[in-house]
Amino acid sequence: MSSVFTDVYFYGNRVAPNLVPYAPLLSIGTKDKLFLIGDVNNPKLALNLDMRFYFERKYGNKIFTSHDGLAGTKREFDLTVGFMYYLTKNLDFHVETYGFNNLNRGNSSTLPSGFKDGVYAGFGYRF
Image 1: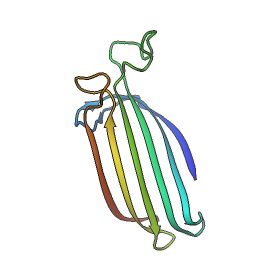
Image 2: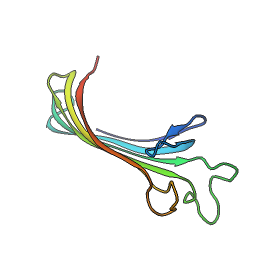
Image 3: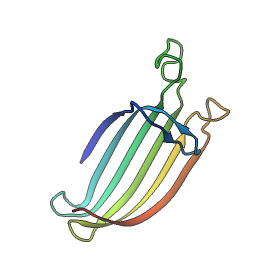
Image 4: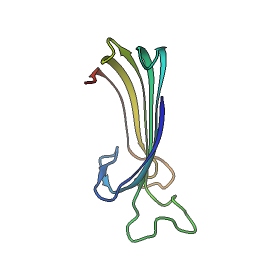
């Protein structure tokens, strides 16, 4: 199962991995689930992949400029990879690792500044 999506943000802020809020313009992402054991109707073990790429809204400038395109905007790339083991069709145990990274925030325009990486585990139940 796969999905590709784009979100457009008209209002509001998002807190970046370096804990600085910003106003997102849009995000492009994909969510994928690959059943390693079982299938959609009888799931047992699945691999999940979630990727998102955020662009920040520029203030006082056009979104696209002739010399930098979207390169002048602040960007964020989030990646989550994990496994889900289905105890029943509605109850699962999952372990996932994530990396949320700023691409050009901070003092350098070419090196990342600020990130959050980690691992989490839990149970999920779908009604």
